[in-house]
Image (cartoon, rainbow, N blue to C red; front, side):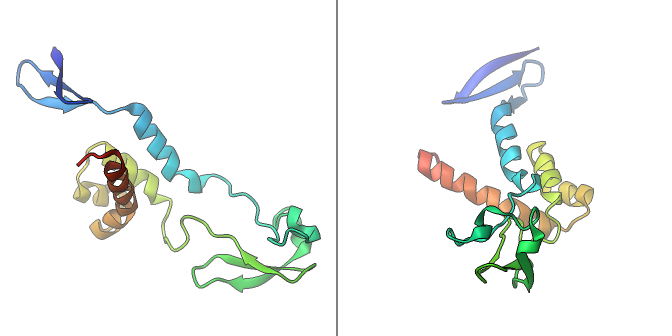
Length: 154
């Protein structure tokens, strides 16, 4: 059996009455929201189309109307580049994972991280290097730091 105690303002912990160890309670909604945020890249992307507002092809996507565009190589970051057959404007679609070699691992790393696995354990389970683990969690860490600064927390 445990007891609920407030150790800091707005922070709840559950303490074991037998051994005295405590576990901080986290909002499942906050964990779910962060998982959804970092998983957006897995959702189908909106189709890219000609960025010129007065072009006939601006309402036709490159996937639904491939005859309206030429493929025009790739950007230095690996994104496909297209050229509009109507107005000649060149454009490319940027994705949040452009430049990442294995973006599908982000979800697994995040799940292991919020389940209190060590960096070494995450690296072993995900079969990536510890440096790759840090590279995947650094953006989340920077976001958390900015939010703490904004909210006035230390």
